[in-house]
Image: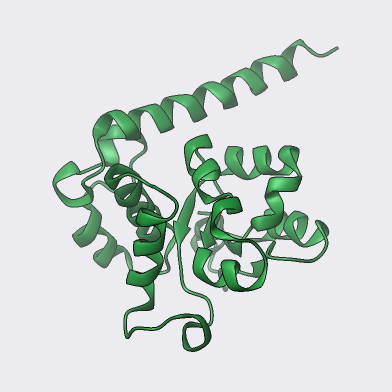
Amino acid sequence: MKYIHYRSRGLNTFVLRPHCGEAGAIQHLISGFLLSENISHGLQLRKVPVLQYLYYLAQVGIAMSPLSNNSLFLNYHRNPLPEYLSRGLNVSLSTDDPLQFHFTKEPLIEEYSIAAQVLKLSSCDMCELSRNSVLMSGFPDKWKRYWLGPNYSKEGVAGNDIHRTNVPDIRVSYRYETLVEELSTISYSSLLQP
């Protein structure tokens, strides 16, 4: 987390989670990448693969709302959530304007139902989205330990308690090892440059 360094120095902290990338200029996503812990929507990332790759490398969280996006911008079948998830971006589900777009008292459950049924996400995908949601949330550390396990802040399989997250270790291992390999390749390549 970017803000922990500032907190350790006794400075005031806040976490920026802007509503960006749903529509508008790509510059919003660039600012979001530079300044944010995570963003809401990120639909426009599908048009800028290089920026999408940067979001992946930095694991900037993207909270997506397919139900509201379907009403306003992009129908379900064109929603990039499944592609983002399969590529390893740090995505989760969220609600957006629940009084306008949702029909039940549990709008987040509606988002998960849509993701499972319309976007054809597997139960493993759904559990990974849930885990990502808790990790990128602003909930206190005590709650995250309760929901995800006492070692949730460790990287890779060491931070996954499969009995709480229901995310298989092989999925967590794949995500972690792939990211580390990408970062290593970039670091190695930068050393080779004259």
